View 1 (spheres, rainbow over the protein chains, first blue to last red):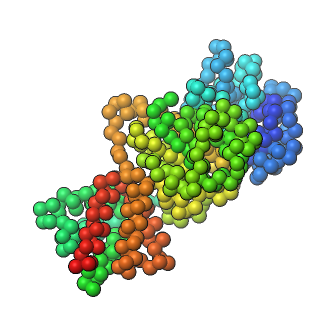
View 2: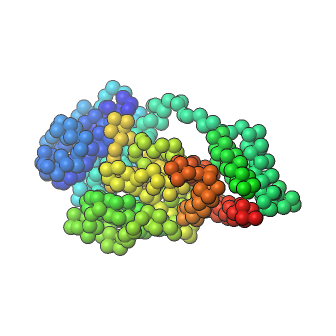
Length: 245
Length: 245
């Protein structure tokens, strides 16, 4: 997990559902978020429902600080992104994930950054949106755009992690090198296959070439591995043996 | 919402939490998914908890069909993507969202496609993973990768919508759709293969499963086409004939 992610605070404004608060604590743990902050929660974060949903996020849930107002909750943050699912946001510009999240990830590498989520039923007020430097909106079905709060958090944290990884090039070049069978091995195996298929009358001399080309195309598309070539050769041998019996 | 999304089926294997099933019905509605399918649910989808969470996804919840096994639930689907959060998936290759979801979105524009999610506690079995053509994994914190089921669904559906939108833009520019064999066809063909390989003594009952899994992995990697499945079946028939002579 990158430094940035450890500096990320998730802020919930007046959450009313204990199930949601617990679920979000778990999500914070899932995505390596360092801190959950609550602004005037309308439910008890220590409710058994919250604890049940938090699972391994229980520590974050227990440590979640409560604030009286949003401004207090974000006062130490360098970049703040608010989220909005409403359509009556006036002339506050909305940004999609691919614009807003890279911007957030580029925030200071030593000061905290925050993502703010609103109330389950009516989101953040326009005044609250204006406390953030940018406002994010998620694409959903126009017929029913309203996401459950914890699902919105899941999507945003996953997207954030993706952009954060890209930006910090955390992906070390430890791509596993897939070893393919060498072309000669594949060719020899196909020759054996062809010879068997001719012997059993599946191929005729004049149809052999195009049909074998199809089998070769399949193996090439799969980037066939050396051990798979051996497997095919084993089958060929056994078929020959069975025919002789 | 695009045509593809309307053809998308979300399949849950043995879900145990009514809250999860209800939440997922809501998510299906949020992302314009046409159908929710349940395989041997371990909870009652009509439980008040499920209904409470479904909100405007109640219609999808009420219409959710139950199936006895995963293969039945995906038998009409052209492309099937399974999801995996476990690390003990053997040599079944895992794909990240940016590879797996565009592939799924490129599925036929008239036949159904499916995304399969496993049990809350232990996901899908390796055998179930092998029924799908590709397996998706989501990036989370290495310290606590296990997502709540409905949050995994939220992330995957949001990502799918994004890639689907992109691909539809490309498709308008005459993008060619590759037609893959449907999973049932592949499964039946592999059953025939297995039966022949047992008969000729290439497989023993106790080695059959892992070896067949290797063959299946090869076909999946190649995104085997319907005409290639027919070719393999033709070879099997001819081998049987040759052995009888």
